[in-house]
Length: 177
Image 1 (cartoon, one colour):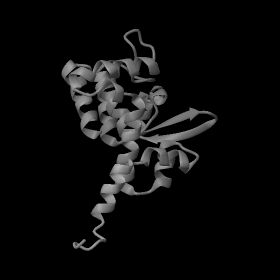
Image 2 (cartoon, one colour; image 1 turned 180 degrees about the horizontal axis):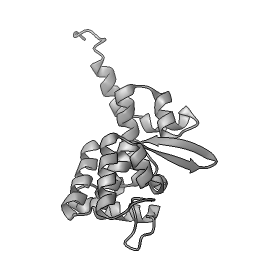
Image 3 (tube, rainbow, N blue to C red; image 1 turned 180 degrees about the vertical axis):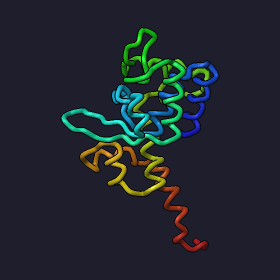
């Protein structure tokens, strides 16, 4: 949920782990896949977009202006003038496994169940939030880099219980039974 995501960000901040705080925000604010974090470079943050080349396709990830400012400030503080922004202490790019493990370390402090904390769940939160704002599944599919809308729809499926609540709120039945 958005609240759990915010608690994870706050836990990273409280721990003084600015890198993890920014990784969480970046994945959730852009909908990128964890494997695409390596495409977040100083150059991309300067341009407001990252070019991702995966599976024979090239797509553009738009980066919100506020995120670009945060990424560039972080890079400057770490003396990163070009290339990847998120690096290990030895200057290498972060692996998907490393990001996953670092997220899991925040669970207890954030009071979020470990079973819920995966980088891909941030992508799902982005998808649901983006769709709620624009109600355009085609645009969402484009932003997420999906070639099929059916793939995108998976992120938007709600539970039967949620659907029943929505039906009740439609107000299409009289008050008498």
